[in-house]
Image 1 (spheres, rainbow, N blue to C red):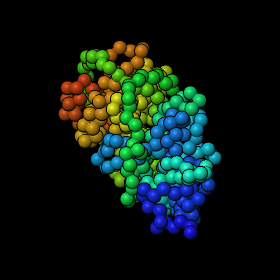
Image 2: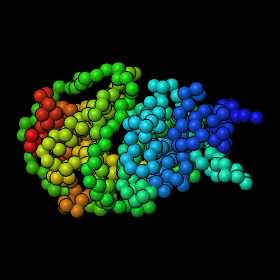
Image 3: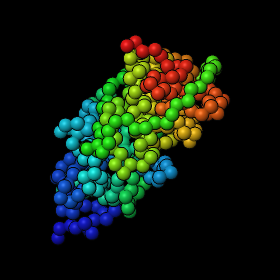
Image 4: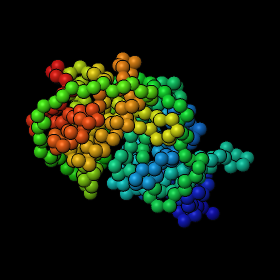
Length: 373
């Protein structure tokens, strides 16, 4: 008897033939869209993933929105992409909602007795995290070469199975690895943007005067220097929340300031941080390797965003070190407009600087280098 949708529930173990009868998709591959069944079936194989330098699975650490399942995109060698034939599966995940498809996750558990037919356990239905649908991560591939992979952040969309064996292993140790700059291009969140052009930003207020900073003490660090993602496309804000728009503002602001640093001849990137005992991977917004400055960007200059940025940059900066520089980096918050005067007082207390974008597009702040162009 063929399988039906009702017969496959989270926790069930099925062959791919049975899964295809219920949810469609191709007989092979890790990302299998099905237009007829309105589904994108995601197959995870722990053995294959570990050889390719990554783990799929649940993060042990939940955030305020609940659990997150990380799923690495398609492409076993070289940088992963959203473009062309090679990126078709990754695009299917990214655009599943606008294409009216459901993400279904399966993980390999073994084989049928006496055969080579693989079996897969159904975890349930998911959707992309609305605030951070994916992140870029730097990993060592099975060939030993470093590459950029797309890690999708999936949120449960209904009943799911959360088994202990599906939790990503915690980091056993901390390591530091410097990765040279390499450009990465982001894909659009929607195929057809509903709006275009710059979104309105708050009015700027100019701070009068600055003062010198003290160098922060050195600390034990862990991190991987990686290139920040190049956000070169606009987000469709169809049915978007204000928070989602702020996230895109942050991405565009970071890319604009990164371009300014590049024109000034500075080497830029970010830090990818693995903390011993945690399953999640932290990633900073922007790092100026030339001047040893760590930036945390926010999409608005609101009090709430500045307080969040302060906590993040104090957390991240203690893990950042490089052979070229002594001590912790200079900490700077990057904003689309000047903060309120009392926010400067707060940031001064923690030796954190500010760079903001003025009305004419220039960046203002004591650490802003002069462009060579």
